[in-house]
Image (cartoon, rainbow, N blue to C red; front, side, top):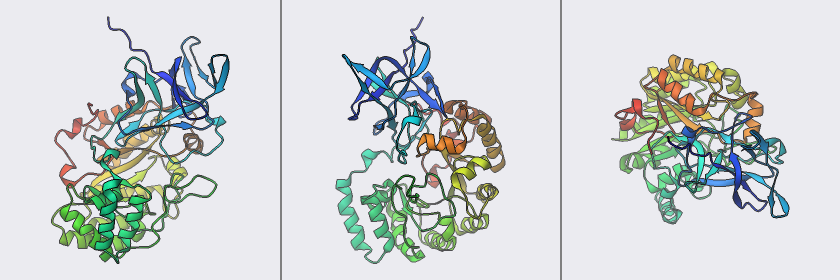
Length: 443
């Protein structure tokens, strides 16, 4: 009879950020606001290129097997003295979806946490390694940090700036690559894979977790928005060589340092037609909130290959709480998704997920109905970067979910052809061989 593997140990940190594992307390995670033990199926080794960090002044919650209950660990004894401790979180490498939040007493934190994604992490004493509550949803390794060596980047940035001295877009993207360390922007200068085309200084959403514009009383945005609208000629001058020369080339509107490109639909449509007329290869992708269906139709007709629509929820009330739309309705987004699919585009949802919200029973049922209604091809299970307590409070979370892993299982059982992912794809890889069985990914 096989011995049951013990659960991982609690990780905690001292005031200086030194991380320790507890001698007997067990790692816990959180779904919504409720602590729970992770299941064996959702515990994986901490992916390479991930990072650990502390949640300041916030004590962890652990499972005490002796008392058979969850406890808050405010202090840990060291010899005769006790020291205050704080929780530890993981920031995972891209391509992995978290299944549990870090378990801690968020009511004790004194700051609004920055725009990172927070994942439950523990210590596997038998294997002597960190483990996280997560599952891999995309096998593409192009986006791993090890592929982005800034020592090689700097001369390439200088070369492109000299090559396009009057192009404002290359100046914007050089700042994104060098100052903000945007991997997509770096790809432009490495001339490979997916490169971004920012176009819009404005947006008609006011997302709680916007990475390019935040109110002063919240938390710093990750970078500044593009301050101008590039001309179609500037876009084509920079992106045509990328499509023609890069391996696995994708150029994407709506990547990070802007509002929403749907606000500049005429410019985007004109540039896309020009690219399609001149390029002999490559994929043109459009990332958007999908707020204006008639503009989506315009862009489909201009020659887009794929579209990705950002949503934190497929329930109107929760969507509105996060996106806080200006001048459009949730029904417009649903119509845009259906339009893109009906026009023959590879259609994806940039699904901003958080345990306890995404896998709530109501969201699961709504998601099943949404897939049936729209025929969407892929769910990109993107970990929402936001303070978990702030998000749960704004979403009105009152209980826990069915489990993020179980959510993926249930969706796949109902819709075997739905694909999970984390990244955009080239046209050649929209429907890879065996995609119906593309998840779980066997490491």
